Image (cartoon, rainbow over all chains, first blue to last red; front, side, top):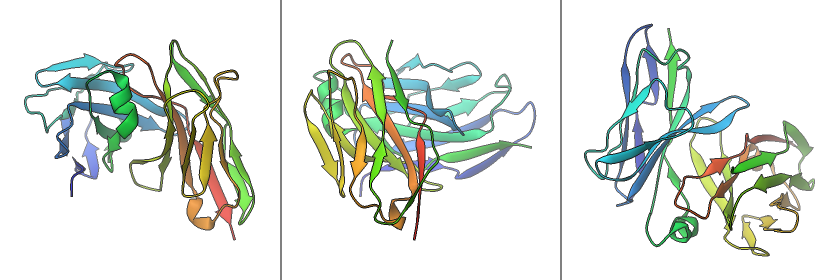
Length: 119
Length: 112
């Protein structure tokens, strides 16, 4: 079955350490997204990519970095510059092309998330 | 800019009660609208969608109608079950090629 796999499910980071969250999809989707979820804040967009080797900042990109070297992979690095990284991180993917209506028809597919905790 | 406002929770209902979760939006152009559901410890699942004004999305007994005149997309269900307990997110997809914008989510608890 096609889907999105996020790993690990739980991750612990020490102060000053960089950590990388994995996101892999086998849906052949063009676009991939990273959202951060905090209690009472909803989902906030960190980065997104609509094509290989290209990505754009979202609303809260500071302290994060991404790469898109392969269509199926979109890893997120939480750097030491991110002062409050404890959160639930969600990766998603969607079809792109012929405008937003294609993405609207199929919606976004989400992974099961990674819970990051600073220790 | 684009934004979504949904009613704050938590919402607690008895089994078989009627559910309404309000959602209003601000957007330029003609966005598509969605409801997603998140069960504990999981990612989000698409519940229903509507891509143009007056469309009604429906799934698993849930319904929502895209009302352009009131910029709303309220979620309703006639008779909730304990298994409906989850967090519900209203979201809009702008008419350009920009990502989904989410509301803050509403936690629903259904008690037997």
